[in-house]
Amino acid sequence: MNSISGSIYSVLSALNTYSTAIDVTSTNIANAESAGYSRQTAVITEKLAADGSGYGVDVSTIKRAYDSFMTAQLRQANQDLGKSNVEVEMFTAIEQVFTDSGDTGLSSAMSDFWNAWQSVVNDPSSSTARSVLASASDTLADTFNNASSELSGISEKIDDGINETVGEINDLVQQISDTNQKIVAMEADGLNANTARDNLDSLVQELSSLVDINISTNDAGQINIQLANGKPLVAGTTTWTLATEKNTTTGLLDVTWVDSEGNSNVINESISSGALGGYLEVREGLASYQDQLDELAVNIIDQVNTLHQNGYDLYGDAGDAFFSGSGAGDMTFNTAIMDDPGKIAAASTGGGTGDGSNAEAIAELQTSFLVNGTSTFSDYYNALVSDVGAKVQSAETNNESVSNAQMFYTNQCLSVSGVSVDEEMAKLVLYQNAYDAAAKLMTVFDEMMQTLIATMD
Image 1 (cartoon, helix red, strand yellow):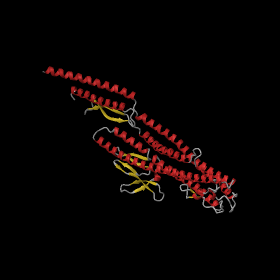
Image 2: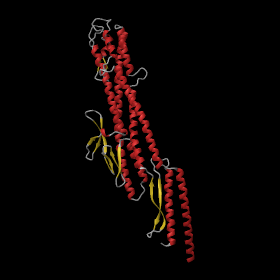
Image 3: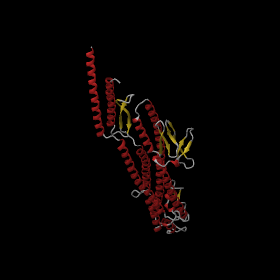
Image 4: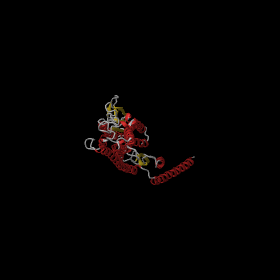
């Protein structure tokens, strides 16, 4: 290569190279606080002629700072935190249902109910004692109704959460597929796709907080995503979706994976992490608490009714059913007794207005082992409350742990891909000086050429 033209070409390549390096460094500085941005580096290499001699420099690639191992660890932490956040929120809501506030709540209502029976035992003919018992009985039924209704409300909230999360998953899956396609198109045109890859990583991290996934990369550098059970969500630019449908047996929402032919496959059992896994797990616990609440209500209904119907009221008539209902949700106090507390069957024999022996038998149910043959009503309820409290405490402890882990891996990723403004400013000065030196050299060549041309004239 001609020495003069070669020198000019070398200077020109330096101008282009350091201009690109300045642009890359400036972009880093501008995005220093941008979430999900990975630091980029212009890799400068020597350009070689056919004979192997050097004749300038070039930006061979713009490298993206990225640690696949730490990114995978962060993805796992996001899955755990997504699940934990849901568990804390939902179990805390469940705990509020069973927490007595002041003199309200199921524990207080049961205590007032049994105390009211004892007052009737002390004075069976007292209209005041009977009215207080009728009011306490109605309050007890209402409190069971309210607790059941609140649990049902939480169940509906969980269903809403499941539907919303499935919708978010499907949206992210489509965005990931679109970004996969964009990256391939950009790189096929020789463009830098680092920003698109940053966006892709952010989408995958967001998806991991919703459901447990496995990641792989295909030959084109695109992200493939599978559920924990191996069902695909993204393969390059091809996508699959999730859906929900009500189970005809349980009445609960099932999460389904839809295949390419539109067939739905229930995948509840294979979802264990992310927000979706959290909703499914809390739902199992909620169903258990609803069952236990129903069992407590049914035991009170059955035991009180059996004794009450064996007694006699102030009019000498046999007692009616005191409560009705098949569980906590529809437990109801007998309106006839509410309207006329004289119909409370406190006596064991007809015609004895001063007889409170049947009322005493009912009052003694409070301390009898009637639930599962091992627990009193209060013990059974207290165990239920304690279990909910333990779940909340465990969820909060776990949440703190996984939050710390998520923060640790976030910081580890930032230590690799984050931007140090000080370091970038130092690079910027270096590249600007190199560019200025090349520009001055180009000016010298220009002056030399002008002088040469003038001489030839």
